[in-house]
Amino acid sequence: MHDRRETKSLRLLMGNEAIALGAMRAGLRLAAGYPGTPSTEILETVAKNNHGSIHVEWSINEKAALEVAAGAAYSGARALVTMKQMGLNVAADPLMSLAYVGVKGGLVVVAADDPGPISSQTEQDTRHFAQFAKLPVFDPVSPEEAYLMIADAFAASEKYGLPVLLRPTTRVCHGCASIELLPDLLVPQPEGFVRDPGKWVIFPRLSYRNHLKLEADLPLIGAELSALPYNRIEGNDKAGRGVALSGISYAYAREIPDLDDMRILKIGTPHPFPERLARQFLDGLDEVLVLEELDPVVERALLQLAGQYHLPVKIHGKLSNNTQNAGENSVESIRADLDRFLGRAAPAAALLDDRPALPERPPVLCPGCPHRASFLAVKQAARGKKAVFCGDIGCYTLGNTLPLDMVDTCLCMGAGVTVAQGVERINPHTLSFAFIGDSTFFASGITGVANAVYNQSEMILIVLDNATTAMTGHQPHPGTGRNMMGQNAAPLRIEKILRALGVDFVEQADSLDLPAAVDTVKRAIAASGVRCVIFESPCVMMDKTAGKKYAVSAACTGCDACIKLLGCPALIRKAEAAFIEPALCKGCGLCAGICPQKAILEVQADE
Image (tube, rainbow, N blue to C red; front, side, top):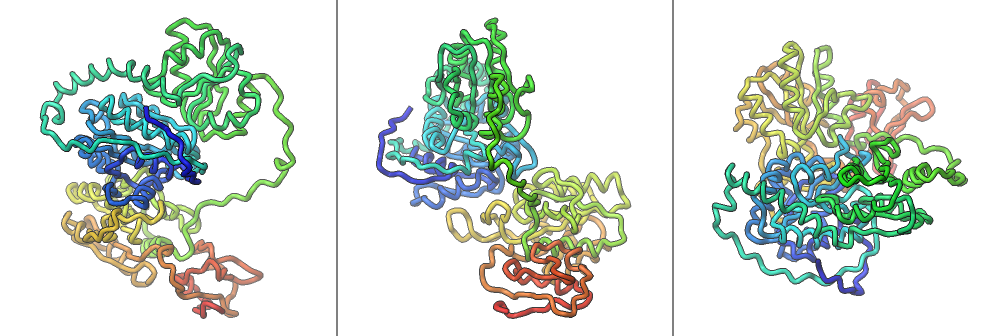
C-alpha cells in the first residue's frame, strides 16, 4: 500500500522498537496504552523519539487507552494503542462498538500475544478476537515485517473505516533485526472532529445497519488484503504436500533447508482470511501441515475451505494432534513437526544436546523488595487467625512463593479486591485480605473498593505502594507525579481516594519498619467494615544510590531463621552459618530486625 524506497539508514532494532518507528513513519499523532510484557517498549520508543508532534500517554488502563485513541481517530488522526493480549479483554467493550461505529483516521490496536506463556496468566490468541470483533488482523513474522506492516495496517484502517489489530508475539516483540528505516510517508493533516451524530452516536438501529454492512464488506476486505506481500505461495508448486504458516512460525520454518521441497502458504493477514489464495494453495495437494501459534485459526479456515469446495486434501495440525496445542513454537519443534509429517527420521542430536539441563530459576522478589516486608508484616499480624490472602497481578504475585506463602488466589488485574469480597461472604468467620499494587489500584482496583463499601463487605485491603509500575519496567502512573510526556502532574493520593469512596479506616505505614507495620495491620484486623493499610516504600530498583550494607557476625548460631522467614536471594547458608552476599544486599535491614540472635549487623559498604 505504500512506497518502500530504500535508504541507507540501517539500525538494529527490537521488534517493539520497529513497530513504534514504523508507526511514527506512518504519520502517528497519538499513542496510548497500558504497560504489559511483551508490548511495553512500543510506547516507550514512541516517547523516546517523539519531537513533540505526538501525544503519548500511559493511560489508566487499556479501555481508557482505546477510548482516547478513538477520539483521535474520530478526528481524522492516526492513533496507536498498545497492550498485551489480556489487555484486549479490558478494551473489549469499546473495541466491539468501534467495529460498528468505525473510525475516520487510522486506528491500530497492537495486542502483543505471549505464547508460553512467558510472563502472563494465560495464553490467548488475538486472531480469535479479530474474528469475534469482525476486524482485520495483521500477524507479523519478524521485526522487519512488523516495521513495514504497521504502515499498511494504518492504511487499511483508513480505507475500510475500521480499527485494525496488529498481533506480534513475544519473539517478534523482543527479537532484534537490522532494519532499513524508510522515509516518512506523506500523510494529510487531520481534518479535526466533524459533528455527525448519525455516525458517531451508537444506537441499536445504527448498529444493526452497520453490522449488515460489515458482514458484506469482510469478504471484500479479505480479498484486498490477500494481495499484500505478507500473503503468498512459495516453494515447489508440483509437490503433493504443503505447509501453511502464520506469524513467527514462518520464520522458524525458514531455518529448515529443504522447506522449499514443498508448497508453502504464508499467511500475514489471518482475518479476514485470504480464501482465494488459500484455495490456490490447496489445489492439487494431498496433505497439508499447518504450523501456527497458538490456536488452530489457519487450520480451521483451511478445513472449512476444503469442506466447502470438496477438496480431497487432508489437513494436519493441532486439531489432529500433529502439533502441540499449547506453548510457543521453535525451530526445533517446527523441525520435529515436519519430520513426523514427512515420515523421515529426526536428524542426529548435536553434541550440545548432551549438555546438562539448566537449573530451574523460579521467579522471586528482589533482594530488599519492600513487598517482602509487607507480606511478613501481615503474616505476623494474622498469626493464629484463620485468614485468606487474595493476591493480584504484579511483582507481589511472587508473595506466593515459599517461605512467604502469602498469596492464596490470583485471577486477573484488580480481582484480588473483589475475590476477597466473595470469599468473605461464604466464609464470614475468616479474615479476608486483598493485596493490590499502586499501579493496579488505579488501573482496576477502585471499582472493587467502591463495590465493597456499597455492599458493606468485611475485608482488609493492603495496598503495596512502591511508587511505580515495577514489574513492567517502572512506568509512571497517576500516583507518581509524572506522565508519559515528561510533564509534572499532580499525583493522585490513594488514601484520599479511599476516604472519598467511604473507607473510614485508612492507615499508612513503612513496611520496612516491621514492628510498626505489624501493629498497623493488627489495628486493621481489630476494626470492622472495609479497612485499608497502605504500605509505602519505593521499589528497591529505583534507588541507585549506595545504601546500607549488612553482614552476619560470629554471633550467628546457624538457626536459619532469616533464610526460612524471608527467602531473600541475598541470604544463603555458608558453612554452618547464614551469609549475606554483598553484591545482592540492598540494605533494607529486614533480616537484622528478625534475627533472634541479633547477629546481623550494619557494616560499611566496602567492608
